[in-house]
Amino acid sequence: MAPTVSGGLIVSWCGMRGIVTLVAALALPNGDGGSAFPYRDLIVFVAFCVVLGTLVLQGFTLRPLLLKLDLHDEDPVGREVAQARSAAYQAALASLEGDQSRLAKALRMELEEALLHANGSAGSSGTAAAGDILRLRTVNAARGAVLASARER
Image (cartoon, rainbow, N blue to C red; front, side):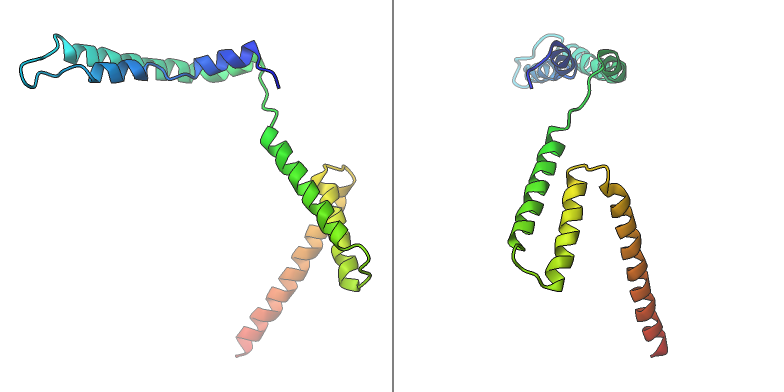
């Protein structure tokens, strides 16, 4: 995606905020050995106040600026993760081709559902929720059996 003026404005607004000035002020000779820089303490104090002031000023105005410029995160990392997840599910499904065992069929159904969910298919959300409820019910039943067995000992 090409850079925009709005994006450039936000980047400049979130810049270093005078930290280079503060470092330069701190680098001035402090008087050890008789080479004191005149008004060094005042310069360091003013530089610190500038940094603190810009942190507060720009910090409080960043959100309104973002809202005014109407910038949105396009989530490039999320898109890459979704593409990688989709490719992984497709490769897993391809590895099951030709296997007609019951376990392979069940795994194929689960992977196909996960692939639909990863691709953002609207029809998969109800099935995924039903599958989650079913898994939760079976896990709770298994947990209950284990706890009952533990109580009997």
